Amino acid sequence: MTVAGIMNQFQVVGRKAATEENPNPEAYRMIIFAPNAVIAKSKFWYFMHQFRKMKKTTGEILDVVKIQEKNARIVKNYGIWLRYQSRSGTHNMYREFRDLKLTGAVSQLYDEMAGRHRTRPRGIQIIRTAVVPPGDLKRANGMQFAKKVKFPLVHRVDQAKRGQKALSDSTFTTVRPTPFFK
Image (tube, rainbow, N blue to C red; front, side, top):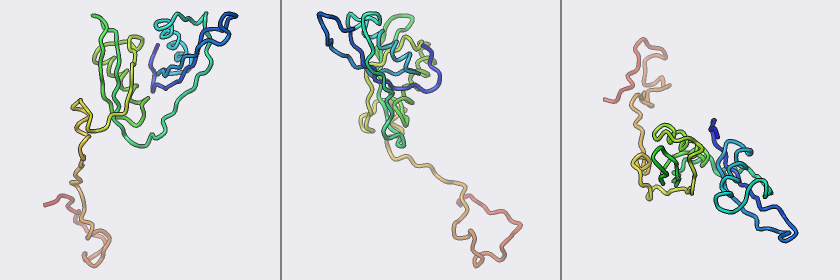
């Protein structure tokens, strides 16, 4: 699986193919992050083969739906629990990211795991994701934004002098304004 651009979130529903002994088999639903629906279906069968005795040849996909974020205008802290395959073995990990969407945070995860741990996208399995409130953050990178962040505006022109003829002799002047506070 290659990760190009932003990942998408899919809900894939599948089951074992109906037979005469079991005409209505149990359906399984999975939330999967993938670049497109084809790879989402492929990952669904990969996990179903691990968890249940099901393969693509013995099962069927009932539904594939792309899940959209409801409120993508507010920056949120996301916690992601994952398992990844490294050169020395399998490791569990918890990461925190700040993003507008969960799919953006997962894209950051794949990029960071490739850069810091040399992990291939096929070796990463996302176990769980959650929106983390600012008080529950564990990593220093996210905690710096948990408190009220202030950005000082240092190069400002005094508002009282802007556009008023009463405070200045002429409309145009040869002297530049000093935007530094003294």
